[in-house]
Amino acid sequence: MKAVVVDDYAAIDQIELKEIARPAVTPGAVRVRVRAVGIGFVDGLKVQGRYQTKDPLPFIPGTEFAGVIDAVGDGVANLAPGQMVMGMARSGALAEYIVVPIEAVAPLPDGASAEEGASFRANYLTAYYALAERAALKEGEILLVLGAAGGVGTAAIQIGKLLGARVIAAASSAEKRDFALGLGADAVIDYTRPDWRDTLKALTQDHGADVVFDPVGGPVAVEAFRSIAWNGRHIVVGFAAGSIPALPFNLPLLKGGSLLGVDLAQLPRREPAVLARCTAELSRLLASGALKPAIVSSFALEDFHAAFNALAGRDALGKVVVRIGP
Image (cartoon, rainbow, N blue to C red):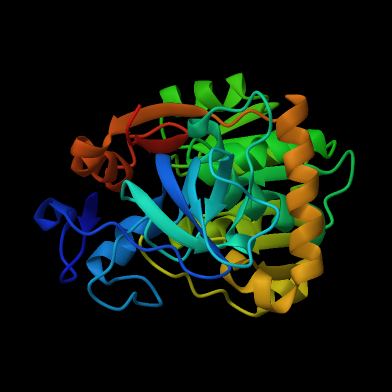
């Protein structure tokens, strides 16, 4: 089978598409013929060995996927060959086949495409868990979404609106801000401008943001916390800006604010019941059409370099998807 193989941590242009053996199905697992893979900023960091945890070499990148079950292992009763599923794994998705334990996959809802399934679990689980569970976002509250045109940012806009918040989307270009408005954001901010906090202040009548959804990090994260409302919550999702900010501890004191971390990878072990509840609700929303992943950038497997470079250059809108096979 064809697979993107990382033999040594390196820039994406040095990683190759190779022909390797198809993995054998194991007890309690399924083998999926991958149709689409959703990639994000973290995948690019992992390839370079720059993520906070390293995948043992060699490895196949890609965590989020959708496809059709090709074979099932001993002990698998509720899944069958030919069934369309969406799934999430630590790695291994950028390949024509992947073998994962049954708990790593769920049926693809009727009417959803493979591309939508591959764009759904990581971003929308992150956004829903962060906003509904961690921040307890309430109807009528003000939600500020940083990096609003990216994969997890677009998910946060949609989830925020479903939870009844007023959503202000912060993005770095006019194209990205227009994209966020098209997804339902109530207002937009150019956070590259030195006076962007004044704009936020005017938009919120001096109230500030009740919740900040932050996949960006860097200096803008500290500035956002300075604009948080009393008893506001700042959700740390990631550091797409490339640097981890240091927050002066007097700011939470002065704002009565909370800093909340979100690490989706730890949910299966630490909060399995919460994970199951969030997954079930998101699957319902996807099946009903209430949620529709924003997919603008789609690439063939042979063009995976371009997909990663679009993410690294922060040029992509919505979720970046790599298509595999028909």
